Image 1 (tube, helix red, strand yellow):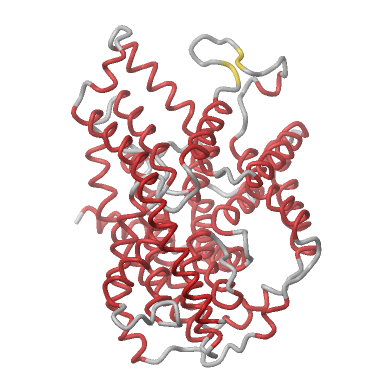
Image 2 (cartoon, rainbow, N blue to C red):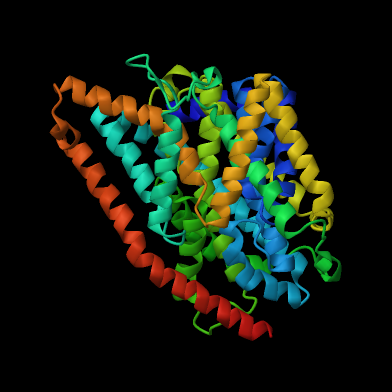
Length: 512
């Protein structure tokens, strides 16, 4: 009953005109960001962080705006997947396999609406999962000491590779780079400047908001400048939307798929570092194995659209569980949201639910509202959102760059921060060229200081004995999961990538 009364209090906070308008704005902007190929949820949230701070919003309104953008972008990623066979982001890759063949059959409108409904089901059930699971996780988290927290942070880095991501060596390099960047500034224990090279502006360390906007938003501008240089993909003009709403028979046919994959996706999202990509891949693969008796997956089977969409949106909700309860992000976008919380002087973790319940429950209530808003927005406005795909990059990219520069200058008022942001933009561009993931860099920058202070505290308490890091059963279990989480993707990744390639080849041979 305590949970339900807390949720009711959350609705009182969320149901103000300001918060409702912010949720609507976030859903609309997020869907646009998700629809544009390459941007995706992480970039969408990163680009709009400066807007939230420039508007001078408080903690709860800022989070409502940015989580609505997050959910909106998860919805929007399917638009270019279904219409153009270009995934808006990594989790939307699996939607291409059946969504694009449906569009080629003249069922684009049905595929888009079905994916919207599946996304709603996945996100709605995941929000209930968040309500039920996060408070229980908080009780476990109160048993954590410095050694356990250090093991938990290690686990977050070890599992970042995911099953379908780039190789583990590049992920480990990116995480090490992020932790190295977190070391810049004055050492809080000794007062000695580290890696500042005599630059006074770096004594306070690197502002992670500057790093995030540079790595995600500006690097995207550089990628566009390099590859697309003013061209607009006009393929969207050739697509026939057809009937807008799927039939009741189709919805009934896909309902068991949506329910199963919502549960799978949520569990994948709760794992630190796995996120929506893993939720999408697992949901599609398991559903194909379970129900695809006639080999229709990959040829325009509506269940092949419903499965990854319910899975990746459920994973997006699941990723919020470790972020709020433990202070460890479950995905790239929740790493960006964690940075926002820290910038607002809010420390995520077990005490957040008792010290600032208005922030947590207001946010959870806003997730429910955002889900219904997205369902109401997406189906009637399918035609309008498909037009967004026709915006030429030569118009879009200067807007992204302008929002980044004006927003960061508005937050810090420092021209040095703008130079640092450009530096991060160039670094992000180089890392993406080398196929090094950006999320571990951000996670290292965010968690590096907390990781260091917990390590120091644990060893100081035990008079310099390093064995204290694996003394308790809880920390030993976390280390074991971290080792398994790092090694398992190396084995499974090759198998899964082979299957994804086979599925794509089959889909290509069918569409030829």
